[in-house]
Image 1 (tube, rainbow, N blue to C red):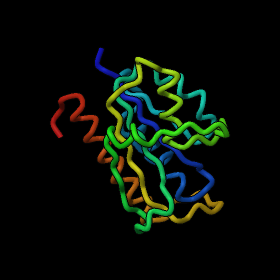
Image 2: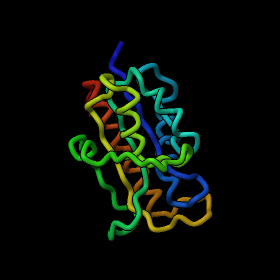
Image 3: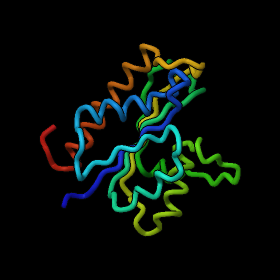
Image 4: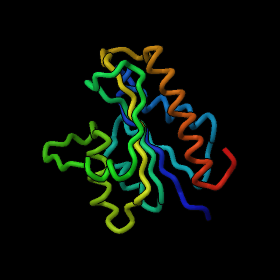
Length: 163
């Protein structure tokens, strides 16, 4: 069996552009369908229990919104594993249904221990609209589509396929 990839999309689908991580996951599911070696996790609600399902995965890719970057909405940030490992913080007041990506990685590391993968990539999309709305803004949706394409390339490279 190939090494497994976990792809996690964070966000609240009822908070406009904050849902970009969920959008990315949904678009990738359309492209890949059900596969043994790629798991898609919607981290929008009920996120904490999903962390236990990361066991057995060798690579993690995350997509989320980020606010207050000073960059225009739709700006994409790609963080390598080294930066990700600096970021996770323990938060004793974490809410079980509102994990942020860095909190999720921190708790996943505690849950998975020696099985926690070293290969982690985070894609963040700059947003400024998190109002109660169920549609993404055009710039953020376009950025979400670019993240989908980046992740498809990441998957191809990981499995040694032509890009």
